[in-house]
Length: 132
Image (cartoon, rainbow, N blue to C red; front, side, top):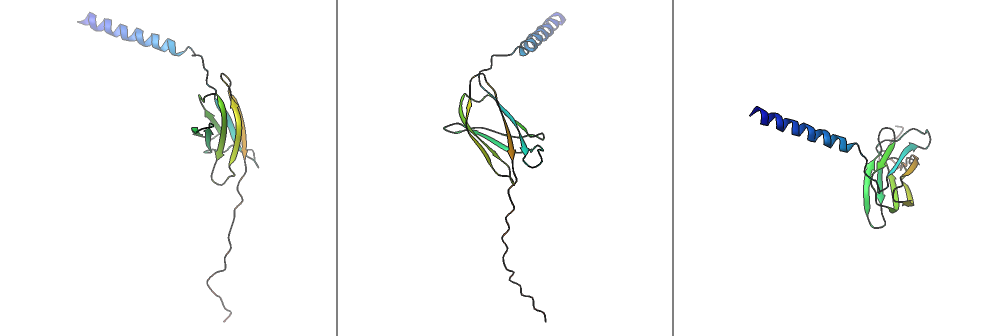
């Protein structure tokens, strides 16, 4: 019984080592990636939590958000022509169209976003103040 248990344990251990060794080999990557960074126009500081959406000619393909360093990545996009939309509350939307992604080529896109101007509607007060 001990020999069977020891044999089974050795088989599992060797199987795990073979599996671990195979993960180190890289498979051929064909689909391109889109990476980049997003910064605030006025200061050059990174913008986090910017919504990044990739659209192909027919539909929305992938969505991600920028990290605390303003970096984003969209992995394994299909080759083709894309539109990328960058959105964050309080900032002007940025749209980059006709970006061509090719097989076995990655693309880097660095974006600057400007703040939206605050718009205030000043209305007369319904309250009346008199000098009496």
